[in-house]
Length: 195
Image 1 (tube, rainbow, N blue to C red):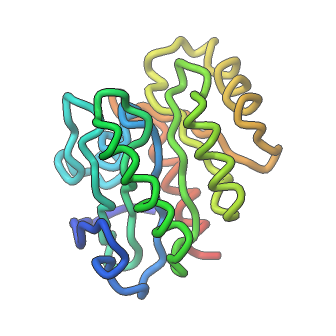
Image 2: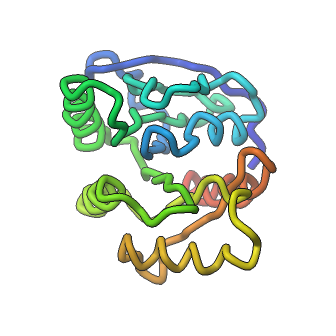
């Protein structure tokens, strides 16, 4: 799949602010400093579609991006960043929960984890949560440029083991810096949209 056009369509904190359920949606979830904005910019070929911030935890809304006029990429708030006040981080849970529970046109959630580290307790909780809704199956291991090629499979095995992934679940290593892995992810997204 080639993304030719993408634009921010809607910013929401409540269901009445969501765009209509007229297009399929693929959501992205991950820890605040996992590189979600960089990945979305890489996928869309736009440097500033999603705002990349020096201080993690800036996405405090659900951002809906309309892609090729055919589907939406949904950027969910980052979780698990300690420097964000507790009251704000607690409000994200219900916000995401409402979206995940109620959105009929949501086809999957792609979970991002940092390939350099074992998935955190929050990563595991998020994965279990997605699994309970049948929205799991694809994990993107970001920052793949930060480990050597011969360490790659070892780290992917660690992610598989920690998140208790099945043989059918995908782990795709991606590097926004080196611009690698995006094509594989776009191919997977295309298949999902066609099903």
